[in-house]
Amino acid sequence: MKQSPRYNQIQENMKPGAFTAHGFLGEDDRALKDIIRQDDADVEKLDLSHAQIAGRMQYFTELGKELLDIPVVVDEIYEVLVDDHRGEIPCPFADNQKAIKTNTRFTNKKLGITIYWSDLNIHMIRYHGFYEGKGSFFRNDPQKLAKALGLI
Amino acid sequence: MKEILVTILSITGISTVLAVLIIIAEKFLNNYGECEIDINDGEKKLVVEGGSSLLSSLASNKIFIPSACGGKATCGLCKVKVLDGAGPLLPTEEPYLSQEERKEGVRLSCQVKIKKNLRVYIPEELFNIREYISTVTEIKDMTHDIKEFRFEFKDGEDIKFKAGQYMQIETKPYAKVREKATRAYSVSSVPSDNKAVELIIRRVPGGLCTTYMHDYVKVGDEVRMTGPYGDFYMRDDSDDYVFMAGGSGLAPIKSLVMDIMERNLDKKMIFIFGAVSKKDLYYTDFFREVEKKNRNFRYVPALSRPEPEDNWEGETGLVTEVLKKYVEGGKGKHAYLCGSPGMINACVNVLVDSEFDKKNIYYDKFS
Ligand SMILES: Cc1cc2nc3c(=O)[nH]c(=O)nc-3n(C[C@H](O)[C@H](O)[C@H](O)COP(=O)(O)OP(=O)(O)OC[C@H]3O[C@@H](n4cnc5c(N)ncnc54)[C@H](O)[C@@H]3O)c2cc1C
Ligand code: FES
Ligand SMILES: [Zn+2]
Image (cartoon, rainbow over all chains, first blue to last red; front, side, top):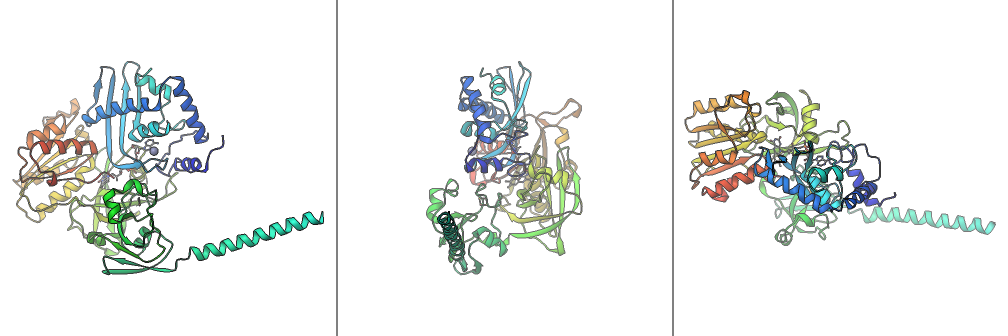
């Protein structure tokens, strides 16, 4: 699918070495618009919204932040460990938003799933419906993410 | 047929003439000629070629405004008060400027294109910021994810900085990284060691600059940096200091403590250092030694999750709880915090509850 020059520029920002060392796209060679469109359709199929998913991620990250570098167990099922670094990272969508370099390690002990996200992921899911390209370290498939977060 | 050919030829001719005219017009329109930058009411006057950004024109005249994004308008650090001649505010600047700043004429200097004479105000301390070309002379492993680097300045150049301040180092393109990037690192060495700086860098998995520093930079390599920056430095007007750090946040605290010792200042000091387990502790012997030499200094390492094999008998648990335990009554005391944003936010709350005056709690902003 053809995308606007603005999206082409954002896709450039997402390549390795532009904003971050490894970029946001992994091995995904689809156009950014297509990546977003596909994930959007998947989220709709789950009868969820990006805001709901981001809100749940944020909820766990905030709980994790309260105990700094000690893992927090929530509802006996979830374990959250937050590791934050000094400095902020700009959003590749060039909307002048920045996120602190905070990373969350999230485990759903019942399902045996451990996933990672950064504060930037929460922002990008909430405002851009972007879950990153396939193969990117910080990509979480909406289906897997919703399941791990106990949303489905 | 002939008519079609004539039409095509005349269209091509007209387009060519138009294109040439546009190129000439652009050359003239974008040729702003020489412009003057008046700094602080005539204190300094620079003559620069118009057309470049204020940030880069100042940098080419050795005036370094803080910046972490290389002029992409994503860090918001490069603020300068432009009193005259800047043109309208750009949409890229808006998110970074408060109403008050806008009223005062504060602008992002990377977004201000010089088209005519400008009058700007630059705080005096920024004139001390310089560019340094250094050679890496030592790299030490401090923990499994922290390294300390020593950078000696080329041609015996020296630096004047206050303990607690930071430098901005520049990475070179490596692996898939095609552009240079800059990141801030607090100086861990003392100001008296002025022909070099030491920086303590914690690896951020997949991080652009920390991967470069940990995996690509070797002894003998050249590194460009600018500095010193920041207002996280010691104010002398207290006799009682609380220092608190986590991870790489130990760097400026080490510099502050060494500086106080070197200057023989009679200050009561406690340094609480939060780490996860014993493998994350470093400079322990150094601070124990300081403790032995100076009865006014106390070092309290605290582990949040010691391993069984650590046989740890010191403080454990949340660093905020340790802080509460050791800091009683904050009246007249100063606190210096350095570490992750989460740690700083939590510690500020504890200190305010212990009657520390908010203006006596110092830490670096996160961006
Ligand atoms: C005043 C100041 C002083 C400082 N002093 C020190 C110091 O003394 N020592 C020190 O070690 N550090 C210090 N820092 C922090 C330092 O400036 C850097 O921010 C830090 O080292 C990380 O830089 P990096 O380039 O390696 O990471 P970056 O590449 O800029 O960021 C990595 C982070 O970005 C996020 N991210 C990256 N890629 C993605 C993706 N695809 N999807 C989602 N999120 C992603 C993640 O959170 C990841 O952890 C200081 C910062 C400031 C502001
Ligand atoms: S240099 Fe980063 S916003 Fe101007
Ligand atoms: Zn964004």
